[in-house]
Length: 375
Length: 90
Image 1 (tube, chains in turn blue, brown):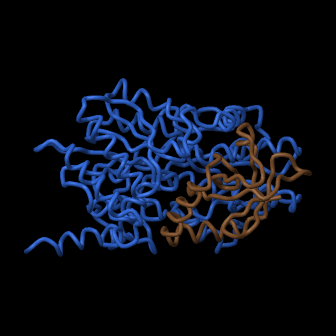
Image 2 (cartoon, chains in turn purple, brown; image 1 turned 45 degrees about the horizontal axis):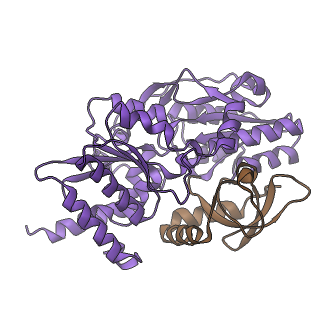
Image 3 (spheres, chains in turn green, orange; image 1 turned 90 degrees about the vertical axis):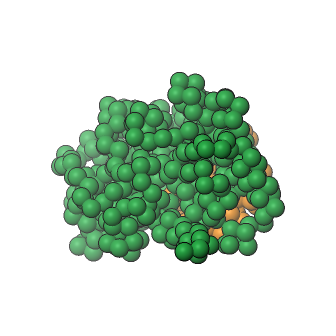
């Protein structure tokens, strides 16, 4: 097994796995949701599910920002990029995400000036270097990338840069979790909490999940051992009848998060009344928009966007995957019409999307299981 | 964009407050360190970098663990390093 061969702490992992098994009550099933796409990636890459008893099911949540961006927002960004004087900048992760008229890459091939950047600060430099062009940064991501966009707007404002703006698509993790908890069709006993997002927001915002919804919540690191240990902590809480917020990733995540980052976000952005998530639909207060005070840097105020809502392709079941209702391989088009090379849905585009992670790694786990099972 | 990449601060930029020259994957990159300044950051410190910004200070052991994990990720990490290599932050 890849996981065992490559992983330096094999015995430790097996030790944690044994303790997990010991905590499982006979006849009971445990549904644990990992929220962050980085965790999904680790789980499939390292075959974590091979180490878990059958009664522990990992459910993949909506924490891949590329996966939850609705087609209409991709279309709007392309519409902006098609202005002759516009340079649209974007993280590379988004280039292949399909809109209703194709992806950024296809728009670029048709002549739109769309450039891949590593950081919003790169966009700022492009704006400085091209004073006769309008540079628009396609801002996406959860709280991990939101502070970077906010800090970049603050810097643009302090420089008085007149040709830079952001098309703000930042989303917030807490309302998404609330929506999942409110949906009746998903059975979740506990949450593996996102590591990097919590670096910014801290652990306190998850308290309602433990206290009002009675679900244990453990913020986890990204190593295979981190994830196994978080699962053990969740099962221990369930076993002892507790539901608390715990932090397994104390090496990086401070309980109170990064206050300076939160202040920067609050200075530049405010919650939108509602925002559409791919697969999850409209969720109140789930995304951020640029505040009036920074209107000069807000692409949605500079351009009058078409803002046409586009339904997901009917064959695509990303929504059910993102809500944890079906496993990636249970989707009708998984691995046939929809592959990382020709994605139909966003979950197959990003390396951290559940479908792409499963397509690249997880199917080997299932293959191993099938081979191990006598026919 | 979602990967946190460890980097070691080499120098703080005297001309531009909040910016630092950081060793990331063997290359020197300009990184904004304003968000970790309250914790005190200087040459020799390790930080976790997201899209050009240091979001957390980490110790050397954590940096080593994270780097080894990232190296095992393969393509996603290589893509991120390529993106960083193309970065022209100043």
